Length: 129
Image (cartoon, rainbow, N blue to C red; front, top):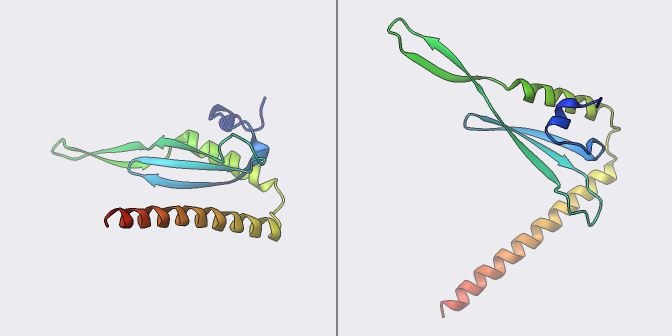
């Protein structure tokens, strides 16, 4: 049996490549995003998103009206977070150089995106002439 059965249910099999995770909320959904450290040239995604519906807490009033408000976090999400915390606790802290390289990679990617957008906008301006 797997050490991380909930993650396995979510099809997170390469647990050794998980480097971090984040949580966010969209409307009545909780979003878990898992980030991976992939080998250069890998065709596998660098992250996966999982959406979990929140349970509703029903509160009746004397008139019989029912008000629903999102309250309960999905039990599967709670189990996944617990497994991710356990997984991350077993990892040594990333070295300063790795963190620095990661930031440089992100800056390089951002630079490419910005340059591409600037070229596109310049072409649009030139086409107006």
